[in-house]
Image (cartoon, rainbow, N blue to C red):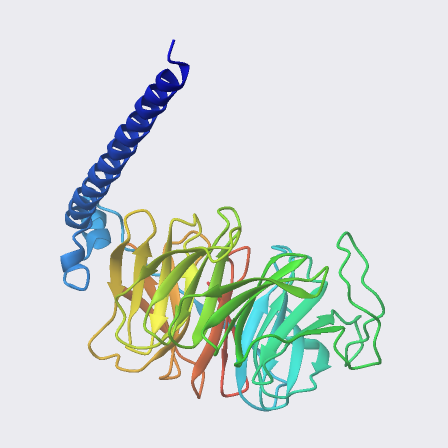
Length: 396
């Protein structure tokens, strides 16, 4: 009947039990860490990361040869020349409507955005920007909003002007989206987003209410256009971020940077750096997703394009030739993914066979650096823009 003594004994047993359980947990954690280390070693061997930078290994072309995939040569010809800009063209973008022939271009020389009918070969509208130092432009999915940015470190949003107007006249936003864009005087942007500490190098719409931007401050920002505020900051690069490409179905985007790396991000999560892809030896100027979203291609000042696979974290293919020693400014896949189009500093565009890694056609026509290119959403045409103030439409 020593109640106090019995309770003390029970407490001591309880303490010993907790201590024994804690020791077991510590040992379990140690064992799990050891297992993870072993798995990382095995994964490194499977991915052959020691040979990651060995460009003689071309897994995709080897599979293409074994499967006897035909090496097709496209026969693209220049179908239209779009004239009207005065100065260097830095960017262009098609609308997402496969039935439309509308595209927008950004010219640093005359400080404007121009809307073009690619079939008629005419400039239909023009938006004069407050800052002439523009570097990028993009349509929203509905083509109702046009985003642009440049050396003023500001993302500007314009309502698409009505046919016949030479400057934008934001008079309120119609449609499903409830963008908080206000009516402004003629020629003024409907909204401005300013949080970057460097130039705006690229912008891509996620949807009608969200736009993603990359900057010379080594970051990317996802903007909420309903609130006109930043939603997420993506920090992970060590130098200027030059380009982004979005895959909406998976919630991922890839960025290319002057730190010679490509980073994969999940824009649905905060600070969501998924993985980083090494391989290039100089600035990565452009990136583009493969149509199925499982891989992407990058273009660099090291005169190469590289094809990376997201599932295996491997370089699938290198696209280069010894006689090509200039930088590559822009890159895009064909509609099917069979071909890669790339714009070069030597005034030319090249097409590459994605699977075989061979150059299939050289497109000549520009008299200065090819600064941008894009494939029409239907896949029937490709547009290239250059520092010769011209946009050229190529089709078979």
